[in-house]
Figure 1 (cartoon, rainbow, N blue to C red):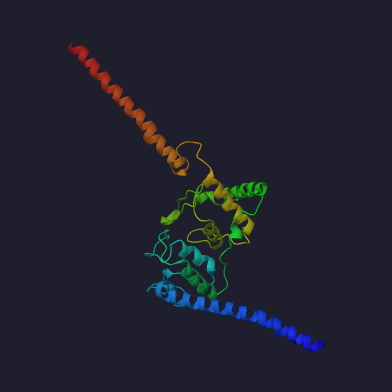
Figure 2: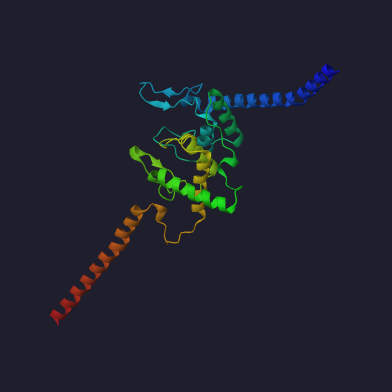
Length: 268
């Protein structure tokens, strides 16, 4: 009787859970297959039919890097922001209109993730502070500000407005960017950006950086004209062109009118 009950219990549990697991596996396999079809049409020319990367005919220039091991997060960032497919090879891929639907982006990400282990697409809980108390949110923003000022301002500016980089590259503006894409950028290191893996910055620290950037977006500009938030460059240019230029123009105007008055008095 005990053996019979054990068999019935085991069979019941298997019947309850096995179909769901099989269905999930079929769904994942179907998603990977559809992702490969999309990849062969839109990505294989630069990245190879198996994501191995493509070299130019001379073999000294990478037309498209290998995608083996980049993970689903890299695909979700690059394709989800419209940076891929690129219109033409260049130093940096600008953000543009997205060419794929959300479902197609997920299928491409699933296929690339199947090539080798890599960073997964983060959940909303990874980059949101909604579940924290008010005090915890303030602490997260302060910590995020310290991390951002230490690691990010050299390229992205002190308020995330972006800046120039060597060899024709640039650090894009990250104010107003969706939190998921900021998290994925830190996790995968696109283009010239450094990779901040979970070993460099913990998921909580990445979340804090995103919270800090969100607080900047909500903070009004008390200083007047922001001038793009580029700091002393735009402020100095404004001072020279508008401030000093106005003074020089006013001085020339005074000198011109003073000379005219003197000539009229001599003639009289």
